Amino acid sequence: MHERLTTQSLAYRLSFKTSSKKTLLVCFSHLRWDFVWQRPQHLLSRAARHYAVLFVEEPIFEPVIRAHLELSTRPQGVTIAVPHLPEGLSADGTVAAQRKLVADLIGRRAQQPRIFWYYTPMALAFSNDLECDLCVYDNMDELSLFRGASEEMLALESELFAHSDLVFTGGLSLYEAKRDRHHSVHAFPSSIDFDHFAKARDIKADPDDQAEIGLPRLGFFGVIDERMDLDLVADIADLRPAWQLVMIGPVVKIDPESLPQRPNIHWLGGKSYNDLPHYLSGWNVGLMPFAINEATRFISPTKTPEFLAAGVPVVSTPITDVVRPYGEKGLVEIAGNAYDVVACAESILSRPKDAWLAKVDRHLASGSWDRTWAAMHRLMRDVGGEMVAGRSVSPQPTHAAPPAE
Image 1 (cartoon, one colour):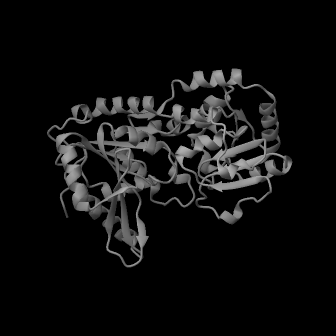
Image 2 (cartoon, one colour):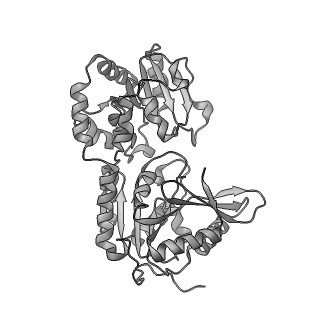
């Protein structure tokens, strides 16, 4: 159960932490902490060892309520702040309401050192007049290419590049696209919580909703949205009706009615991060049926090394950051159509895994989230000095708020 806090009590706790122990790190995210466990959760859980982490989510709109922040804590040491706003607010009203809520919580002026960490440029609209001592943009996806992206996204991202001290990218292709837009851009592709997913290698029992599904199983886990090639999924199922396709994840931004229905396709819904190894343990092949479109042009799927750590061989469509390095090194099979997916899967099903798994483990040894966070943190310390090391020093904000209107 999450501990719920009032704005007043949380402000006191954040003030206490900031002044006595830890620098405040405020993350502005387009993803919700309790949605799917991915890059922000991996990194900020580790950041919480050094900082007082406040994770500000996008607003929830509700009828006839007073604007307020819902605040709660998580076992990882992160505090979640969710703006609840009245329905019917204009775009300007939404920005103004968020600006006031965040400023009331942490203060417009930085009384103590603090870091701002952005996942979405859209948050700059309500936070650009708040002081911070270090600004980091962790550019994990090209959000402007996703379905439903705002027209303001590109303009605000340009402003965020100008505002930031450091820019991290979620993959090599995104780094190549953004490296000329800022003086300090660094590629940090998807990493791996190896011990967590490696549990799948030793688990023998299936979860209840998978136990009755036959073999062989081709499995997918992750968000099911416009980045999935649903026609490809249907074609694979039709080509091999004896194979079972197990699809795990929440359906977002697409009509659930558009999901192909076949006797051998099993849509099991979202599962917790802790439960994923139990499902992967029963899969013969990992399936990454991404569409080749603008939304997938720069993605670096976190699930690639997670499949490998679980000991599950993978077939993926030709996503650039999967082809490099996983396809080139023979760690993942690359297929552009249903016939090729089937051929690759048949090859996987017929071959021993020992040599492949040894090669996988050698590759994954250098790609942990702990190493990724440590490398990011070194860069932050290089720029922010003692403030980023977690010591309280006299504030010398590099991003000063303009005078109040």
